[in-house]
Image 1 (cartoon, rainbow, N blue to C red):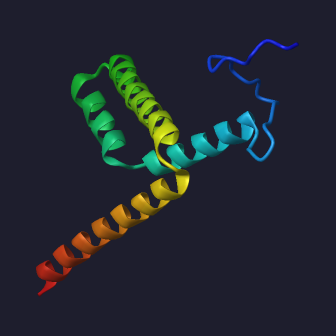
Image 2 (image 1 turned 180 degrees about the horizontal axis):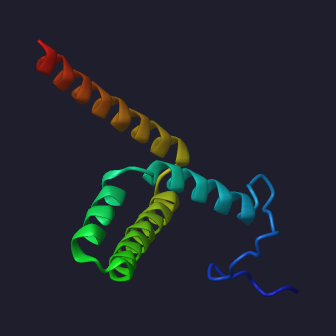
Image 3 (image 1 turned 180 degrees about the vertical axis):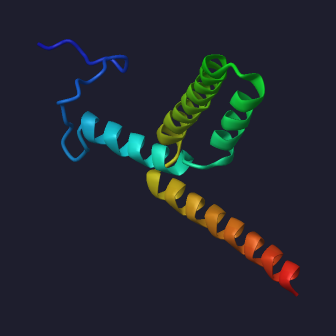
Length: 115
């Protein structure tokens, strides 16, 4: 009889669960999505300006990288908790409604600014 599987076991990059993407596919998808989303955003501009001001690029890089790793870890931990307590469909609907509400508020603000 096989020993029960632990949540702490890490799949290899070539393993794939039935009905799920491979670990490698998830990694590449996550990397590309976050990399493209972060290009030119306020974090990158702030990092650039802090480097220019401090003249200490490696210290700024280390601080920025540590901060991004920390926020990513927080996102993963909260996401894992949500996945264990809330149905995926509910999360999809909640995210959609939230994004629509943000779009409505921003559109209203833009409309008010132009009027």
